[in-house]
Length: 309
Ligand code: NAD
Ligand code: UD2
Image (cartoon, rainbow, N blue to C red):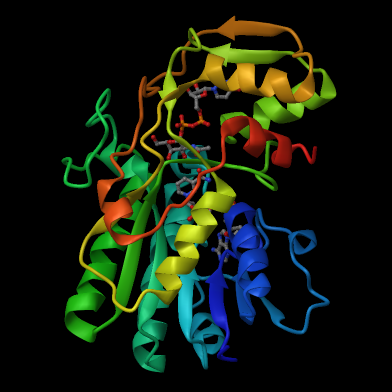
């Protein structure tokens, strides 16, 4: 195994720290650049000599350059992942969510690092493709600063690919869930909120009728794809949806959660969220052509792991 570390920007967070664990298990060394705004030290095995944490901001160009030196590849996950935060404070989230990407690109160009795996989002489609399995060339309709920064990041990564030989692999994640997802905000992932409340016996509120559907993917299944992208011999043009092409309603998800916890707490219904997407589902043909998804984690198994059962 090569000793040059893989740089994981945002590696102390939910997806990043799950990725770090799997990379370590495969013998990789990792360098994590994270400002610990939502990420946590406790998500990382910092006593492992193959783990290095640089605490700092991807918006700091000089720091990103220092972090990049000597790395073999980059997985860029650092971002303010809360869409609502980007709506409330577009200026400061732009620093993390867009300027951070630009800094990663520049630092790679300077250091001669080629491969970058980037976490974009289904948010770039806005409401387009709703009700269908969304294909990647669906017209983009970013509705928030978060989505606009992700889409702009994709375009800049493509510019550096064409102009400077970077090898980006751009993924548009749909709804990811699993251990270490932070349930603390009302805008946290619905599974993290419902699981925590089910475990504590607190009432659960469904916004709308509970028949809205999402394409949920377990973080372990996503991490297998991310590692393949780090290792892939070549990067190709264009973004790739990451989802299972499976529609699960909130009610179905709650049934699976009920199986895991035994008894669900009281469920109440509130008004649907303004602008909520009714059905969101990934056409994952491109993903399946290029990567091996393998056996995916059924929701009841993923929920059991999330709850440590
Ligand atoms: P997360 O908040 O747990 O992880 C983000 C990490 O980035 C955190 O550790 C945070 O401290 C760090 N970070 C934030 N701003 C930073 C900055 N300016 N400099 C350095 N570090 C910074 O969220 P997550 O769910 O693990 O998301 C990882 C990535 O995947 C994000 O880019 C997010 O936009 C994207 N994504 C996630 C989902 C999902 O369902 N979880 C869906 C689509 C896209
Ligand atoms: C996801 C992303 C969001 C953005 C969006 C783009 C997450 C956490 N959110 O939003 O960042 O990219 O996709 O389309 O990945 N709900 C309840 N009760 C609750 C919380 C949520 O009923 O307590 C509902 C919510 O109204 C929605 C569904 O659960 O219908 C999923 O909500 P979510 O916030 O987990 O994810 P989503 O797809 O709306």
